[in-house]
Length: 121
Image (cartoon, rainbow, N blue to C red):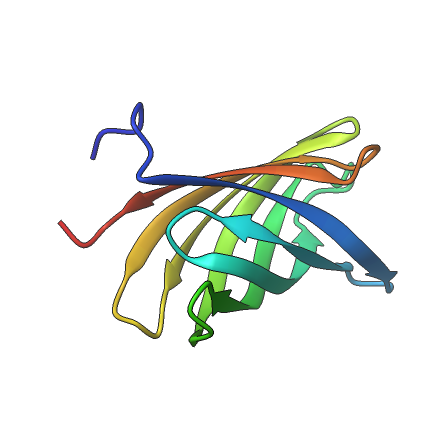
């Protein structure tokens, strides 16, 4: 798989954050190239005391530009450096697509840069 040429990009924003003793739930929304507008909830749990690495599980719903609705479970890992994090996960979209996805999250600006690579080939 060539990770230098993504099959699509996007830009989502953090819309809300909920913190509990075990982790943090984030809600995101924004446009993803080739799909439409994504709405995603993810739960991040750290695996180290400094909370610099951990796991993520979540769900995404995507409203296509033609009004179709597709969904995907999300499973992955993250690494945080200060106020920024990289999140890596796979999805299994209800339309048959499978992707490897990388998000670059800026917790200060709440902006997230998205790239994905199709695993369907």
